Image: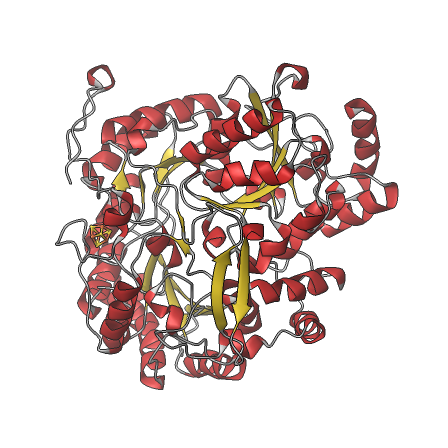
Length: 636
Ligand code: SF4
């Protein structure tokens, strides 16, 4: 069967763009004999191969499942539109790259949800797999459809399509899910509802079908109520307490073709407590849990040995915050540069220290440096709790030019709460600062070579953040502000990039939506929405029509300021933060009051550590050689 399907797929490949997306056979791919495993999981990334292959979480989960002798995990990706058309024309189902097996033959289809604009691709994948789109229409004969990742913390717009959503860290909970599935099947695989009941009892597992929602006359949510006995009113997230105790993949699949982040990746810590008030990732992954430097070094060595990559990235939400980062990455860089391997830190804090860290690791090649002040003025940075002063920004720029960088990328967000035109002018001003500092440091001649990029995205209010109560600026106003900044950028050495505001508007709808938005997603998909996160495919007018036909009022979800007492679609999906704390922090934002980082300063009682009996875990210095791999104690 698989061979026959393979032949049919191969015949399509000359007709589609980037056929390497569909061939599999990559270095380190795990191919198991299906007859020798009890459980088969199709890890189905709802975006293109090159995006999915860059996702560290997918590599981690692929490894976690495949390390079990009784299970196999194979990968599938959303086919590009030309491939989808060819597959539909030939009646070819969605298949996995490892064994060319139809996804419908797997026990579980697992979708990582990283970005709301992949939701229509999720429907494409289910449809191409021949699996009913609606969970209510699936029977015991169909695979279990689960989804995890950051968007799971408000998966309500996808609720009718999902059997289970998994909240939080996946490494431990996936084994509980597989064990529960196995036990259910060994018991005769009789009742799908019984399987869902078992899964709903696992911390981190949310079964949308077990909850009923009612609405107030004004359209706001009145209540979420469990409809199944024993199902929790609020679903807690799964939390890994000690990253050192968790197996990390050092033999990841190496693609045969160019992908977005084509490098080895080692995760140095999880979580971030800096408290940037717009940042969804920071709030759903608290507190900070570090891997020990010894383990990071060991993993990095193995990773390079097993993959042959010439670039190793130390990843986290803000790697420059890693305890003793300078000596850790400096030593790693010294060691790996002999092998021609460049060590990189993808996210860079805005201060001279972080530039020094970036400098310490960029021994092989020195490209551009990225700084993310996020807000143009010191005032707006206080509102968003980006604890960076104007002086920090200037010092970082100065350090970057002194270190040999000639290109600086500056990231900002437009439309932040309380933003005024003066805050926008301050964004443009930062570009001119960079050029002035370049001239001071390098002289006029050399400064002519400097390139500055100002990149501006549109603020999307996110669930579970202090800004969840805030509206998004209207589309017209976002566009006005984009053009307003442009008026103040006067030098050709400054490149100005801004994200399409209409894309951010639909992102806000899908971020803040409830179950009623599912109809708009379905309608948009039926009307042809695919790869909405890609500019060449995104069609705002299609989404407007879909919303209209589905009776979904986008403004209700996106442009409305919400009261502190309003019940949200995500209130029963808990990352552990207390509502009172989010309200307090929103008030602090409006008063331009900053909050310190609890990993170094006092606990601010956001609630996460108490909810999940977990503590911030910083691994102190004590970087030792390979033969002294005594992992040092963690300090709270
Ligand atoms: S409970 Fe305290 S220590 Fe834990 S993440 Fe929240 S503020 Fe930080």
